[in-house]
Length: 214
Ligand SMILES: [Zn+2]
Image (cartoon, rainbow, N blue to C red; front, side, top):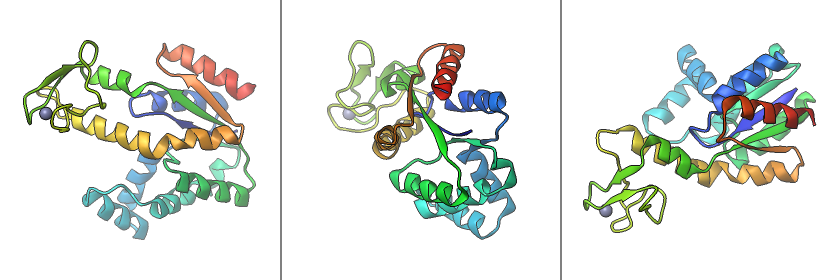
């Protein structure tokens, strides 16, 4: 059973990936985990990765592909896996297609947890403040026109005492720009499971399993 799970940051995809991996007895392969391992073993790829992260850059596609490939060719992947956090771009998805073809693995389904980013931002906080010009917003009663950005001066909006906020907004913006096009990519291949992600965890799992078995 070869699966991919995707969704915006904060959509709960890590939790669902673990549950699905247990159900089908396949490894849960998270890009975060394999990145951490690569850095720990500190080989050529690990050093390159550390360098990219230190510079504060997104990890380049070709480096990400190499690190993931090294994991997917291992024996424990022969009967399947669930990928979590990879692919994140169309370039990565195309590289994965080539690799799977080479290994003669067939992707069964791509699970997309559909959670509106405004709901995720809302979980971080409903009250937003522009520290630059002092304008305040509320996601429910007075939302900014662009998600997470001040209407007046286009600065990042923040929540008092919340350092996480900017990180969440940045990750969501990257997701919207780079990862969301993958939904269309897999939809065209007729293997997309679009699952409403903003409901009870058990309900989400049930919907995922129903789509996988379909
Ligand atoms: Zn402002």
